[in-house]
Image (cartoon, rainbow, N blue to C red):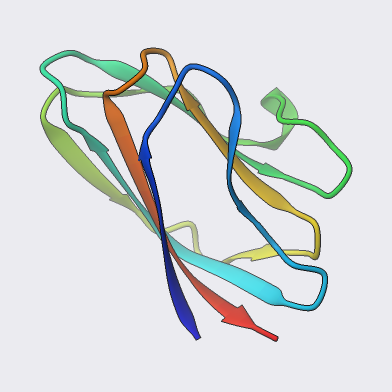
Length: 107
């Protein structure tokens, strides 16, 4: 089943966008990232293994700059999430970036 997760505008603290259930296999197909403001902002997006915290070692984006009034589609080549894994996101400034994820969820 294809699932669409919208995180809304990001804050400046690490927040879980999505967590894989213990009975599901999840494959992320794409991220859509939009900067809806008139200023640059930085994105931090992590694929955090179960039992770990967001850090530079599990970052997919780490301080990546997104230009004003722009959007980007990222195809991560099918990131596989194990049960308990999480996608964690934050931005340098609150209220500028929006992240969408499209994924396959198989139970």
